[in-house]
Length: 145
Image (cartoon, rainbow, N blue to C red):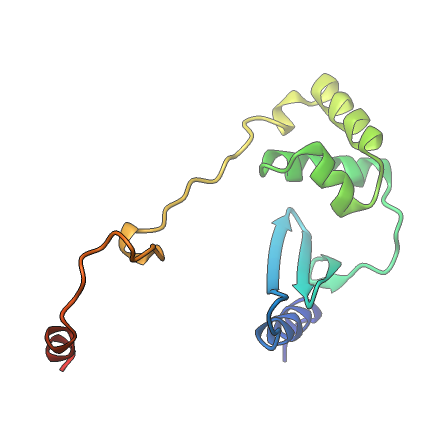
């Protein structure tokens, strides 16, 4: 039996796989402390769904202490203030005020801010073939057999 979080993720992923061009299907899961955000872009429509401890959140108001804890986690994870505001559903000024409050009262909660590094091996990156040497088709087939 899947949790509501995983059930939603599976359904969104299946819908994303069925997406036809010119649209794209994309599903992203982000974890922040006990909060999880699933963002799905399917057929040009973006849907966000929040979960707390793998259960859906049905209320739309976050107490400032809970919101600040979430803002600190998201900011530390590399999100910009405007991105946090959009994902939580508040004004940029609210997030700026939260960050200011956190810098004054709990500066350790915001540092260091993480930046992701691309660790994709070079042989797994799709590249343009225009600058590569042509491959003899017969030789390529014999290497596969």
